[in-house]
Image (cartoon, one colour):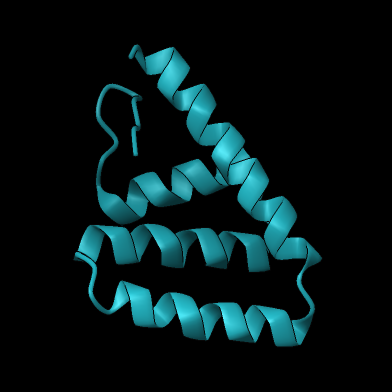
Amino acid sequence: MDIIHTNERMRQQLADFFDVYSALTAQGKAAFQVQIGSVLAKSDERTRKIYAGMINAAENKLSIPETIESLKKELSLAKNNEFMF
């Protein structure tokens, strides 16, 4: 899978996540965070950072490019301007 295709897929996944997250009520968001928290407790640090970054971006209404840049910084994966999940 090439970088361009992977990045486009990642952008679509972020857009889908933002659409779903923004449709949740405050109670729904709280329930989601509790449930994802229990799943992430068993996950590696990188996965936890990705999900925390995605939730933070959705809550702060960041654009997809802003979210990607934020995740790059958080994960220290900025390498040759490429980023892959």
